[in-house]
Image (cartoon, rainbow, N blue to C red; front, side, top):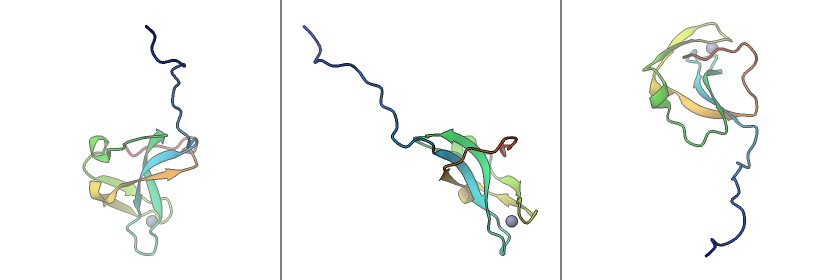
Length: 92
Ligand SMILES: [Zn+2]
């Protein structure tokens, strides 16, 4: 008795080169730049921010240099083509 033929193939995600970040929008009204808090890695299937994030994070904006506090509800996950630059530091 044989299993129905063929080889078992590993399924490789079609979208290569996607990088996922936990991001926030700067709270300074005239700034609003998107800042990355944490790099999650490439090709993530399911992201649960709540399981990884502390409850609220202080983040200093690289553009306007203002520091604001961001709660979990204000964080979201965004996809980028670019990996983090060398020396980039995660928020936690
Ligand atoms: Zn800013």
